Every structure is written in C-alpha cells, then in structure tokens.
Length: 258
Ligand code: NAP
Image 1: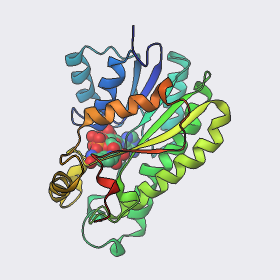
Image 2: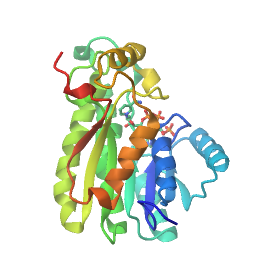
Image 3: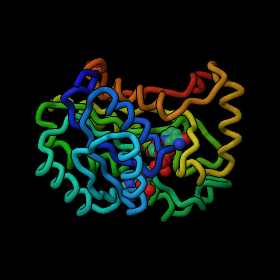
C-alpha cells in the first residue's frame, strides 16, 4: 500500500455518522494507506460506523467501545487495542460534549455541573486517552485533536464549550512536552464550522456558517475532507518537526480582526 500513512495503525475516536469530522479524517487516512481502529460510544454510532465502513470498503483492524467519561472504559478499550492490534502510530481524538442548555444565551449563566461535564468529556478526555495510549506508541507517533476558534475568541452561544476548547488547547501543549521524549507529537486542528450532529446543538449555528462564508479570506466554509487532509499531514512524517501546535483549517477566518 502506498501513501503518506502506509504501514501505520491509527485509532480514530468520534465517528457518529457520515457528517462527523472523524469520518472525514478516517477516509483521508485510509486513502493514505493507514490501517484503522475505531472507537465509539453509543451502539447507534457503531451501527452507523458499520454502514459507512461497508459502503466505503474500509476494513477496520478493530472497533471497540470507549466512553471517555469512564476511566474503566478507556482502560478496557486501550487494553483491547494493545492485545488485538499491538503497536499504534497515530490517534485521532475527535469528540466533545456539552449539555445543549449550556450552548445558548449568556455564558455567565453556566452551571457548575454543565461546566464540569464539558471540561471532562471535551478536554480532560485527551489527557486520559493519551495516557492510556502512550504504551502502545512503541515507535513514537502522533496524536491529533479537534478544536475551534471559540477557544480563542468569544463566539456567541458556544459558551462553556469555548472554555473547554481553551483547556483542550492548553492540554495539547502540556501533553506535547511530556510525550515528546517518547517520540509522540501532540497537535490540534482548529476547524471552521461544519454542519455535524454536535454542531446542531449550538444555538445560531447557521449564522456562524453565513458569517464565515461572507468574511473569511477564502469566502467559503470548509468541509470534513479538508480537515481530514490537514489531520493526515499532522499524523504523517511530513509534520515530524511539529508538536504542541494548533493548525487552523478555517478558510483563514481566524486571522481577521474585524
Ligand atoms: P459529531 O459527529 O457529533 O461527533 C462527536 C463525537 O463525540 C461522537 O462520535 C460522539 O459519540 C462522541 N462523544 C461524545 N461524548 C463522548 C464520550 N463520553 N465518549 C466517547 N465519545 C463521545 O460532531 P463533530 O462536529 O464531528 O465533532 C468532532 C470534534 O470536532 C469535536 O471535538 C468538536 O468540538 C470538534 N469541532 C467541531 C466543529 C464543527 O463545527 N462541527 C468545529 C471545530 C471543532 P456518540 O455519538 O457515540 O456519543
């Protein structure tokens, strides 16, 4: 098999359906010759994943349940991956969660429970997963997570998730320092808005898409496949000198001051 990721075994977390950013990444990684391991949370996501795999001719090395909010589930999933697959070379963390009630109105109204939930699933999970995966990166490798401009700027309604993404980006830097000596790089892609199941939970999401189309230097929105290609770059040898970085794939929207 030829390609930028030929011979690499990569764990992809977060395919819920064909619109998922993780599915765009999985397609690009497969095209570049990677063998894929998928994790899922809901049974419904597994069913969707199986349909997508069958339709696209991707033969996964493994599909394994993993709820990142549950330490035992994370431990079990990576123990299974270790036993059944062995060494891995890449990990894609493409998941997040917040109560939809927190994704509207004023940020100042954020509840303690809503804050904790968003941080736990959307930011701390990267730490838990990186720790569990570390022993499987016997030849070094690359971890890539997905973030959003709401980490850096105020995006109305994104609220508690913006704060969780800010924590996620800080986690990327701290993890990059810890895991660098093991030859493991840790980076994030900051994607522009993409219409996915999760995005539907953010109030006013259509307004965000319209603003990007109107103002971004490229005058358009981006899609899952573009995020997939950028993530492949970060998973591949081509980015071997890059760690602790946030790469924007947003048609240039983040550079604007007004
Ligand atoms: P998506 O298709 O809805 O995917 C979200 C995934 O998170 C689902 O597969 C879901 O699994 C998983 N998940 C939620 N809670 C989980 C848990 N406790 N344990 C394990 N998995 C869990 O939405 P998406 O937009 O592709 O989101 C992927 C990532 O991209 C997220 O980090 C998101 O913040 C980020 N991102 C999205 C956008 C955008 O505009 N869409 C922009 C920038 C960044 P189940 O369905 O099985 O629960």
